[in-house]
Length: 496
Image 1 (cartoon, rainbow, N blue to C red):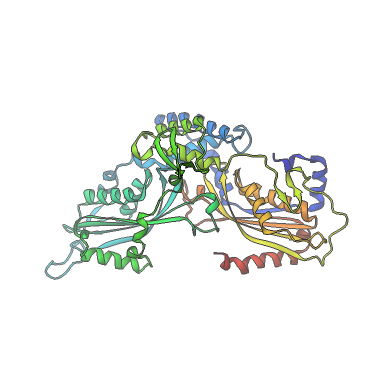
Image 2: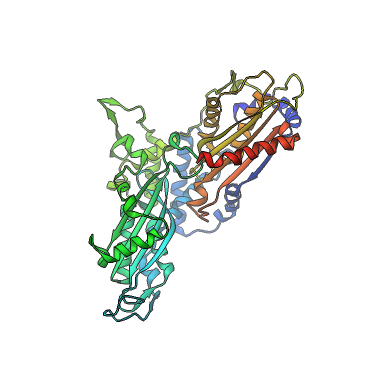
């Protein structure tokens, strides 16, 4: 319970009735989180159960390090959920390509090579837009992938199309970096189906640091493109590679244009340290001065993450994983529970009763003020995965003619967003805080993408969640609410 909720409970309950709090949520994330309670109780194999038993205490240690109470409602099952998400996200270690491809090669008549290339003798096959998610081996955060796979059949045989995406998924469901992922998929397909050649192209997006998120889409994410080739696709003048690139361009994908991105820094958390070994990182320096962004992570939390890697069957001292536990903890610490006061238009929100009754009833003629498209990044308390998006705030002025500055609202959003959260609670808390200052009416809409919805389990790639909280006059004046919502619609295209 926050300070806003704790103060004046008796008074606030009566005021809630006066304010007519209405909260409506289109929340697939919450439903999916709660529906999986029953799934989590299904019997697991002995190996998976042992791994879960080892991971769950480590997750509890992380929650403790974040200043949270792992016994509170909402966090009690988080260790189990996080363990399950990591096991699902690294299931590729236990899968074998030959088990997928075996029995999926089919005879297909081709044409005489002197005539041309088609069918089972040289007719190129490209499967485009395969949506995948993988875990970044540098920071353990999921990254999104759009994968394109092409191959040239040989020997009059073709492979079932679904097997191309399934093989790609085997290697995506491991701790990865983009270039190695492309190379492993290419090599595995070439070895298993023995074609004349294989081409793999990846477009990858990594979530930036929370302070660099600017909107509700993946715009602003760190993007990079990578490719790998074998057989007839190799060589700068390969006609098969040129055909592959041309078939991607039909979907608006230009690997030549995007190829320069392969050299950019991939994981944003790598830029803040010089890893030496797990549990210890040299701090990034500028002219001999330690960077303020390189705050050492608590050693007990780093050790907990190392034990999680061991539970997944990984070696925490593998070269690519050196420094990974440190970076993951640094990410989590950005959402550490805190009790800082937030100042909004002269009011200290943590020292203010949520619903102070106004001197008189709100006048219908008071103007509606709005601050739209305020970006945020929060951490889902159910899975310890980010959710991000924008907040739209509307309120009636209090009659004194003063308008609250946008920077105050952004600070308010940051205060409630940068912690372990659920979207429904965050929407309500922001609305209550705004109403405590406006007194007349407040409306808050939050639009967000939940990585826990798209990177694990059901993988609802293009799903998004919207929540709305309505207080005071916005509830009793439908036209005011409609005008605010229309304003959000009218400005949505301008904010992208």
